[in-house]
Amino acid sequence: MTSGSVVESGVDSAAPQIAFIIPCYNEQSSVARVVLRAKDFFPSARVYVCDNNSSDKTSEVASKAGAIVYFEPRNGKGNAVKRLLRDVDADVYIMIDGDDTYDMQYVPEAVDRLMREGFDLLTGDRMAISQVQSSFRKGHRFGNIIFTYLFRAIFAIKTRDVFSGLRVFSRRLVKSFPIVSSEFEIETELTIYAARMGLPVADFPTSVRIRQESESKLKTYEDGSKILLFAFRLIHREYPLALYAAFSCMSMLLGVMLLSDVYLEYLRTRLVLRQPTLILSIFLISMSILLLVSGLILKEIANLKYEVRYLAYLNRSSYRAFR
Image (tube, rainbow, N blue to C red):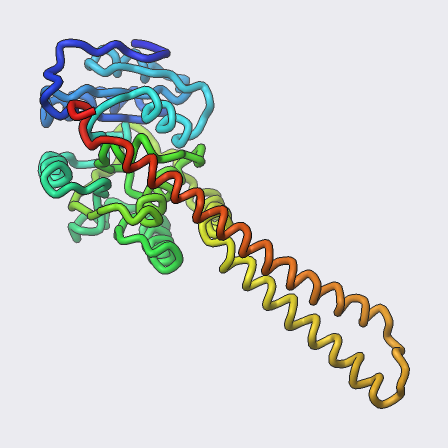
């Protein structure tokens, strides 16, 4: 158990090192099963658990099951994942929730596919197996479908399950991925980052079980509103020109409409009788131009940001043995 970096020894440096990263919050009843199952599927893998400020014995149970435990005092899944990705060094990373709801039977095939075909991100698709859908709460199933189609339309992502907590990703992606999210939006941010970078991604089938001996931390309506706000922030961050151009067009349209009324009245009377309307129209037209220019500047900044990230991505080797 540790709160800092871990010195790892006795591992064949020529073999790709696989690491399970498991963010946990109050999962003492299930985390041991997840750790042991991970070791069953990958006996040589290291299993890392991040205790996200739990109030139960999650860290003790995980440590007894054989996991290397880190602590993250800041609440939020994103903060826990950030800590794990920052401190864990491996060739292949498998991220899975600590609630023991994900079936790992397809994970070995996904890992093999990632290394054999050069993928950077493989996502466990809970929709690939029809009977899985019965394990979703009704509101969560509907919300997952709606948000997945929304993000696919806006951000051109390819996965069918944007909120899946089961992911397999490469060292290159991990070491070039700047995490911003602090909560459960981490899965969405990871997916959008891979899409924006043009990285090779794919899905693999998985199934989920209903939680046993614990309750879900998700809140349907509250989390849905958080995701909508997060989507707006992502649009602003990733596609600023589209957002600012839309507001620019609305401002210009309204400004021209108001100005045309004042101008037509001037042609009839040779007087400007509605000076406040004239001032407002000029303000809206000026604001429209300013919004468009701001969008163009932010677009170039976003492009430059991804150029730097892509260079960082290219600068990372796929495997530690080849560094």
